[in-house]
Length: 95
Image (cartoon, rainbow, N blue to C red; front, side):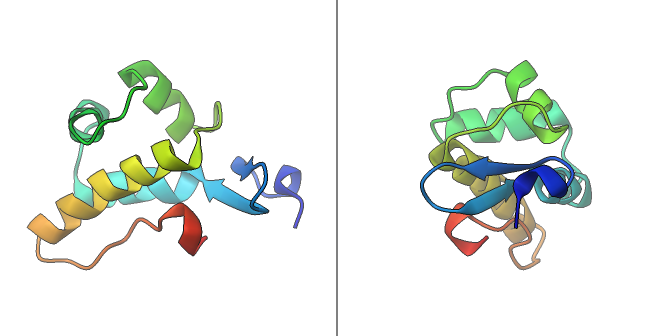
């Protein structure tokens, strides 16, 4: 599948997989997290992109490294676990 044909899914060079920004944005909304709250969680896990960069990614701008994508996914999944729900944000190797 060509990532240019799937909205703003972002291709990760070398692994043939797309990191799906809309999936993470939907998960953020379902988790009830503001962009700032998600960024704080992501930063606490070791993320180094600023809030504006994270927001741009979630709305289709820029492509994170798989590690950064996974930090965002993990921050979201931790919130789902706190809510007693299963993980909703896939990790890069699950895409």
